[in-house]
Structures are given as structure tokens and as C-alpha cells.
Image (tube, rainbow, N blue to C red; front, side, top):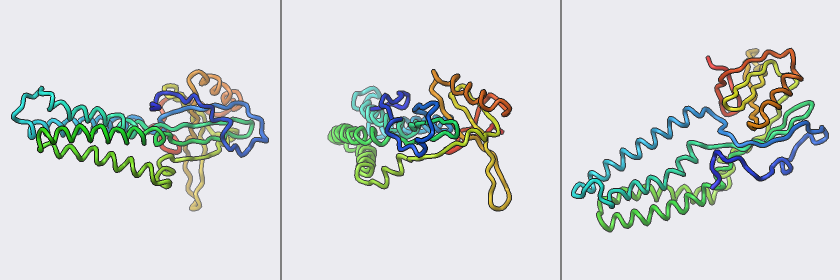
Amino acid sequence: MRMWFIQPKHDYVAEMPWKHLEEPAIMTWQIRVRDYNTFVANLFFCIWLFAGCLFLSLLIFKAGGNRDVLDYVNLIPFGVLALCAPIAMSVFFQTAIIVYRLTENRIEAFSWKPQIDSVKPVMKWTAVGSGVLVMFLVFIDPGFIVAAIGPVGIGAMAALMGNSKSYQSMVRDEDYHVIDWPNAEAIAVWRKRNLIGLRFTWHNEDGSHYSVYSKVYCRHQDFDECLSFFKTRLPDTPYREGKLIVHSHFATLPE
């Protein structure tokens, strides 16, 4: 299983259908990142973990009240929770692979979420393994039948992910966009996440407007080189460093 913190070794740069190949590339790179507000995602994972432990504790004390707390049968549901943990992590710690091509005129970027490719087989075998454990529990004590909800749900999700092309396309969230970097109005840098934000102002039909930052993630070893490029080419552009609020398609400054 490809974990979220492991950078892809496969070279995607050569495989992308770049639309401006007539422009020589100054720099190309690919990176795997959590392209969203990670604080919120981490919080929800902690809530899921707490709720799961609370549910299993209540289940054990209700269905296995006549056994010792540390009886091996009572510990099996926590094994099921441990098997489900990688699935939960793939949901709450989702990542995107982003491939960049920088030229004199623009930045092209392709992005997609690869989780579905690795999660489907994990979900399938997690459902099978936890299902066997639940059957064993039910054989010992019918009160554990409630625990079957987990494997059944995981199995249903695995079937949906494996058979629905539209669902797979939605989950992969494939995207292509262009950043007009020579016309950036400001540069904002968040070194903690190796993120460079380029500010642009967008005008609505009703005359209103808003300013947001286009996101450029850099590999840690290339961050200073990327930043130096923008600072050199945009010497009169306002520059700041600090935290950015990361959204799905753009970033903003903290209020």
C-alpha cells in the first residue's frame, strides 16, 4: 500500500498531456501532498478513533460482561478496529499527486488523488479478515453480531469503488490548471509545508472581486531553488512569509 507520506517513485512528468510543449520547460517536478487544511482532517481522525474505541468498549462490556476485561475474546474487536485504521487513515489523510511544468509564461499542473488505486484491495481483504473475526466472535457469543456492521460496510464500499467508473473518477478528483505566474500580484511563502502562494485577483460579472493565492507545492530539496526563481523574476512583487489557509483549489491568508 502506498502510504501518504511516501513520494511517488514513478516518473509522471513524461506521461502528462502537456498543452504547451512548444514552450521549453525551465523546471518540472512531481510531489505528493495533503492539499487541504490538515488540522481539520487530523481532528476528525481523532474523533473517529475516539468514537471507535468508545463503541467497542461499550460493546465489550455489554456483550462480554461475564468475562474478564482482558479476556482474549474481548480484545478481538480492537483487532478489527486496528484492521480498519488504514482505511480511516486513507480517508482522513488523503493525498494528491501534483505534477508541475514551469515555463517562461506559465505553470501547468496536473493533479489527482491516488488513494482509490491502493485502497480498493486493502478494503477488500480488510472486509474478509474482519468478517472472519466477527463470525468467530458470534460463534462464541451471539451478542457480538452488532460488530458485523463494520465488515459489511467495508465490503459494500469496496464493491462500489471497484465497479463504478464514475465513482472512481470522482474520487480521483483529476484536475488540470494553469498558473499565470508572470502576472502574480504577491508572493506568500509557508516554509513548513514547502508551499509558495501566488496571488491573483478575480473579477465577477457583478463588478465585485476577490483575491486568492494559487498554490505551488515544492519538494523540500528544491524549495529554495523554486522560491529563488520567483523572487528573481518578480523582484518588485510584494513578498511575505507565514502560514496560509489551504483550501481545495486555492489558499488565503489567515484572518
